[in-house]
View 1 (tube, one colour):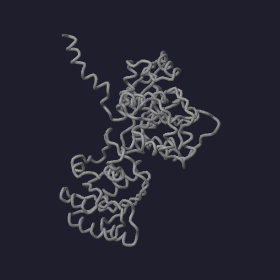
View 2 (tube, one colour):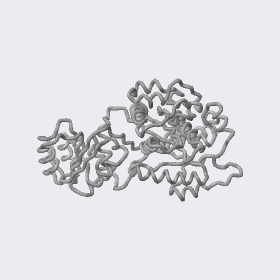
View 3 (spheres, rainbow, N blue to C red):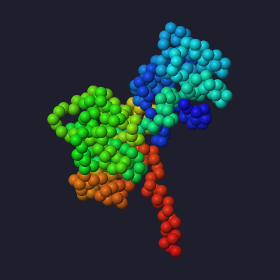
View 4 (cartoon, rainbow, N blue to C red):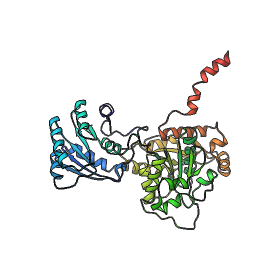
Length: 422
């Protein structure tokens, strides 16, 4: 349940998006019915129903407020969640008493009202209301309220999915994804898993020097068996905090999937792993689009050329339109500074996409080639290299974790310098 204090102190203005640190877990397959008094609230609820986190919920909106709800449920069963907009203290309490007489047991109720009163909030909780939201509301307020009802405080936090995709083929998106995951696991000490979604040509196994007998193909071709125990058996452990769900990288079958082929895998990983990094191949299919839209955060990897600029812009526009209540995607430039190759400057990317890249990774074929051929990460090849620091910074931005072991240790530097001086 969302506390009264949070509703009054942290309610965001209309049109805002959640901060990097806020993580709203998706709602399960539930039925939601809203009874609104105002057109503005109805529009906010409608927009919430189009949010990716309510993608599995079945939402129905009616006007008429609590009176319409009472009349509707005299002859029909109540859904999992009822959203009621109402005005006035007496209207709320009297209406809830009438609704209780026709409401099925187990139905959760969200009330949207305009009275900012802690005594009223306590009375609503006493009468079984799951949440009270102060109007006016925006789509994210509705999403947050519905989703948080299905995330019990005592339950393990639902994992964050980070999707990494290339703006075009050959830009090094898989290498970036694997090194970011390594930084998340090693430097942020966050249990993570890399899911290689390029089943035919995936390189995660090579990059981490792993050759597991099973992997993600076993899960996607056996959806009825997918659960936490089954996924755990498929994971290959790379380090104490990093595991791999490897691609078979074989051509003995054709990997054609439906749009929801990976849904059960992602849901299971969310329930058991704090961070999931998806290595999304550069293809445009129903399931690839669904994986990107459904991720919590997205990193696009581009080369400093015209095709990457066009494709990055197209991906940005689609994702921003499909995810209006989420943070905008991030992007980085890779392979910057190839000798004698004309390049498009980062400033031109920033102008076209209306946001600067979070990193520009220099072209270093010797270091990246050595890492790839040896099955190592860049941090293992050169821990102090500036590219290693870039991967750490990207990991911080994508996870919302600003503090790392390295940064904490650096706080001692001034003291050590003084001691050396003495």
